[in-house]
Image: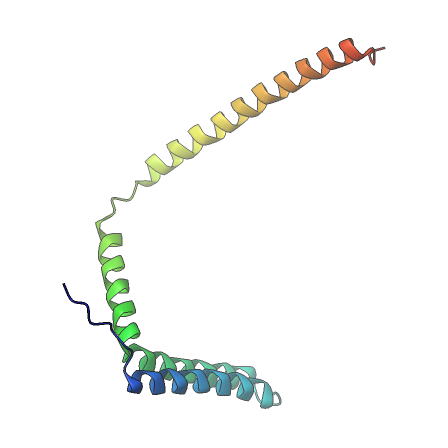
Length: 124
């Protein structure tokens, strides 16, 4: 058994600090340059966030996250998705069942209200 504790690399800490500063700086810049066109500001923000994401992907946690995302994508590709006809049929069944259950609850509520009025003398 490996009892060695994994400690984050000091370089990873520096990388995360750079990522944090890039994102914070891009947000400040987005609002500071308010007089410029919005598409220029949004483009700059996206470029800086992309660079921050690239730097974050080079850390240990970033590599684990990217591995998880690849595995999740592989699992999603294994899913057997229903056909449009199956989706329509199941949606119809769900709608019918919702209406049926709502009707049963409405009838039950009406009967119980009638019984409560009868017992409390509230009926006309």
